[in-house]
Image (cartoon, rainbow, N blue to C red):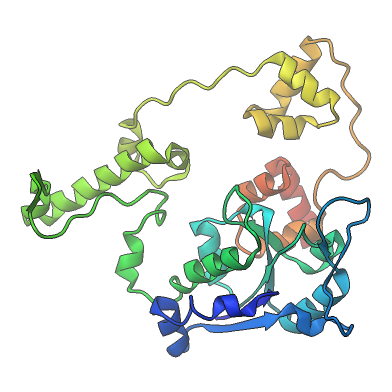
Length: 329
């Protein structure tokens, strides 16, 4: 696999990837990693790559010319990812999807962002490593590289990958090593029993328990058997959605599909409650709703499911299926 990184600070990448697993992957020829200074594609003597935003405001914006030239020089047939606070959340599924590709170009965002025209024409997807803001996209790019590199065949033992957190949608359970007792705290007896079937059962139960306690939002998508799911604690009831909130959102110009996604109810329920509240619904838009067929097909090719595409674009899965049918013609 090859990963190219476009950044304003190439030296930041020297130390993190000179040691440990990523360094071994590079030495073994499993990963080809190239770091590029974006200023190398600037055309003026000051090597300028940014400019003030139209409309005013604080900060600077990446100019389209040098960034477009750089991406087009590197991408070939690669998948271009912009690291951005506005991107889709990077998770284990995204890491596995990227690890299956032959070539990825990572663009480390900076300043106030990137000229939107570049995102529309030269970026395949935007990714974020969390709901917080960093000084730049370099550290997120490092996170993506590390998460992807360890999944490449032959980099880490396959059995180790199978037992990690997030591999099957669950957190990993507690781990213990010698001594069997430390400051009055003992290792669970089952781990000392030598009964491998009982140990595996205990670890599975602990992984489920820990996930429910610490990351309950992961449980719905976790790979659980019917019996395991039946034993889950009953989730707390969701707060009722107020009609006033639905009305306020609709009157602000938001459509019923986006309102439904925001409040976790169906678009039909949204429309029915709006009518009951005396709201006159807008007529259906003549223009196409959501992404184009080409956009959906491009993202589908990266491995996203129909449901994931629907969440990504804020439309129904029916709309995504319609776009995919059009793209196939």
